[in-house]
Length: 144
Image (tube, rainbow, N blue to C red; front, side, top):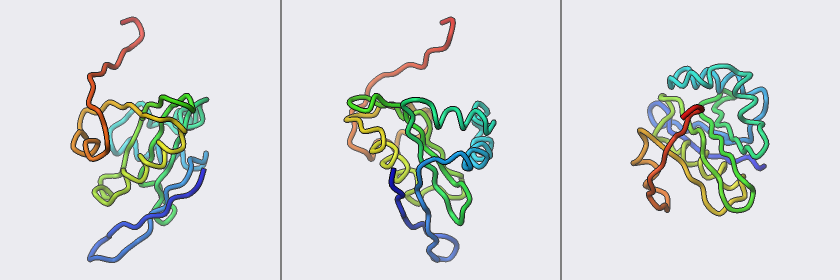
């Protein structure tokens, strides 16, 4: 999986680079911290992050600024037709700089699939900027 480089604007217009790189185990602790920041307790444990990002069929990318994790995305796919974007998070201090788009595109491309489904409860405006078809969806839980 290739690295993707991008730029983000910081402070008074200075440019600092962001690297979009394939997930590596050393990113797990930073992703867990990020997930705590964005209030995703299910991914607050680095061991769980490692399992999720390295699971069979998983494609995951990390956004790094000066070596620090500022975002990540993870999708599951069959490698041919269908994938699902399971997680996309960017640290609040690094949002609205194109990082989420870079992560989404890199992760989608890495799945090798023709389409990617997702659910969102707060980012409709962002996902509507991609070519898409809006559909209804459900999240099921064990014992339902």
